[in-house]
Amino acid sequence: MPASFDLNDDSVVVVIGSGAGGGTVSHELTARGVKVVCLEAGPRLKLSDIVNNEPEMFGKLSWLDRRVGQGYAPDGMPVWSVKGVGGTTTHWTACCPRLHDFEFKSLSTYGQLPDCNLADWPVTLKDMEPWYDKAEDMLGVTGTHGIERLPKSANFKVMEAAARAVGYQDIDTYNMAINSAPRNGRPACLQLGFCNSGCAINAKWTTLFNHITQAEATDCFDLRPQSMVTRIVTDAKGRASAVRYIGPDGVEHEQKARVVCVAANVVETTRLLLNSANERFPHGLANSSDQVGRNYMRHVMAMVFGLMPGVVNMYKGTTCAGVIRDEVKHDTSRGFSGGFQWHLLALGPEYIATNLIPGWGKDHAELMLNYDKLSGVIITGEDPPQADNRITLHATDKDQFGLPVPVVTYNKHPNTNAMLDYAYRRSKEMYQALGATKTFTQEGFGATHNMGVCRMGKDAKTSVTNSYGQTHDIPNLFVSDGSLFTTASCANPTLTIISLMLRQADYLVRELQRGAL
Image (cartoon, rainbow, N blue to C red; front, side, top):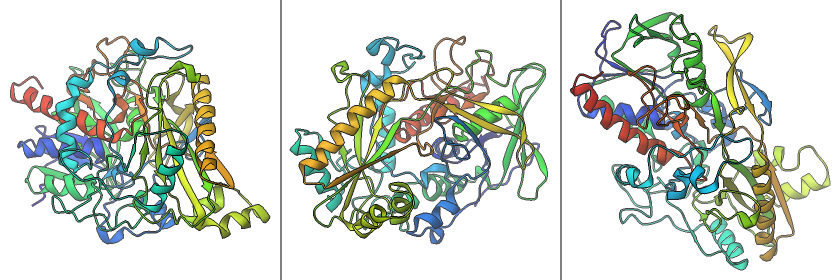
């Protein structure tokens, strides 16, 4: 049975957020008998709420509260995240690559790029391997632990043939947290498509339908949906002592805490730490380094579609079950540092109609009449950290909770532009080699791979947390999401977030047991 803990119970760990980070920490702590109160800003959906309809699910999933975007971050929705139990794992396409060894060591590998803030991670691939192993097995990641890969869709076959036509070789249906056969109580994928709208049959792993329900079975987990956290309170010793939140009743409550883990995705994690400033911490919590909110990264991301000579029906099949890895390397002869990869991509007609050729006319009509002949890929590349790519608080504007509106400032680095130019050219060459009559490109949408802002590091003067996500300034305050990333790599971040949280939870339990927290 789900637990219910008293607001004055100061023995609980308060976890803010229930996605890949918060859901995993909650699952691991409760499995080892630690009491957890999980505060989630959004509602809890049921499996019956998930439908294969992108516009409808966008409204059900999206965090639509006002956010300001500056620079290359679109105003209104500079980042895209989910507001609901399960966080962005309900939306994610379930791609699960590991970071490569060199991606943990970008400063050592690339050297410092102009106007960048590159740093090596305080952990290595060797440190992370056992946690990657555990995460892959837990999620049932295809292509690992003897788990069969997903089948090839028609869209994949077009991508593969196009890639091989120009000499690429490292191609398969990817490492996916989507069942290729029944496993752990979840069915096999039925190739329904529209995976980023949620999985209507629960073949895709999410914290919503996995970690959360498993945590509730322990009697150690108190989940409170529609609970918007407003402030972390510190005591006279400078320790995190309580969390204030506005519940579904519209009333502000205060939950006492032994430990606080912030896993609210980069915008809300930053806003909460900065908004919790007090006399002892005038610049925000865990911010003596002035690094909270800085080094925001979002991956170099752009879509390319080819109009093929025959029918593809790209929407049929697992949305992103396909990868070309040949460009995942550091080779400056291409004109940039770091690497990128292509993932398979399929989007519904509503998105295509309003984005690839906006408006009306002959070209728009031709595109939509030939929607069934489109094949798509998404470019995902390493985005270098820049100190002025950051999240701050608006000086005057408040939201419906009385909180300062977040401001996301992001500008592309010249390395990013060089990478995109190269990737666009190679993408078009691939599709044209297979007979594409036209190609379409699009970028600039609100980012979903959000990283940085509370980077890990060994030096408290240049980082926010240690390698376990424990803040340098406040020992019982942890950051538990992708905000920890020191650099972005070109890998989809969720598997690494989950692996870091498995490692964090193990450390947290040991510290609790020895009375250090």
